[in-house]
Image (cartoon, rainbow, N blue to C red; front, side):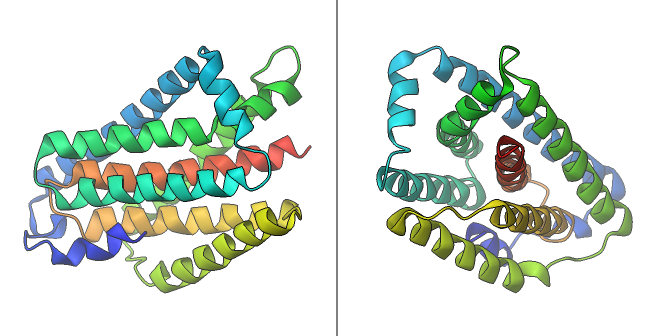
Length: 238
């Protein structure tokens, strides 16, 4: 969210100023990169699960306050990657930022996916597949709303910032004092993630220039993975 606030600092004309053909090409490039990021996430996650040391280390971080330090590290890495993808005009650095973000997401997802595989029983993937289908369906629907209506959802910025700040405070308090945030917190985070998808898709339509498709893809991928996290968390609770 923070890096997206700097969009207007870029002096290049936004995507709304270019012709239809260039705009469609920008959208295609953005969503192609989102799809590639998802595929890379799956590949990296599979690799992590094949390395016992990585798997055991990630699972060990779920104990006590270690998870809090893990979250802080994750936020530092992903914030750095977002800023690099947005502010750098070097495509190599933008792709490095996207790679860094995907690897960080894959690592932090290890405990949640491990839990889902355990709960799924012998098949090992049923809950994950359900969560993936629900996430992609909701993501596609929310994206379609913005692309078809061309509505500017930038008004969500303040509400999302407050919502994420409150959520972060609750997460930290839960980790420090050892209480479970419960099902309704996850439901609320699904709502926040959905709002973030509307906001980031709106930014793609109204705020980026036609060379920022990697940064746009990273922002959409971040919101997509946040949605997937909490849908998977809800299904795990069953």
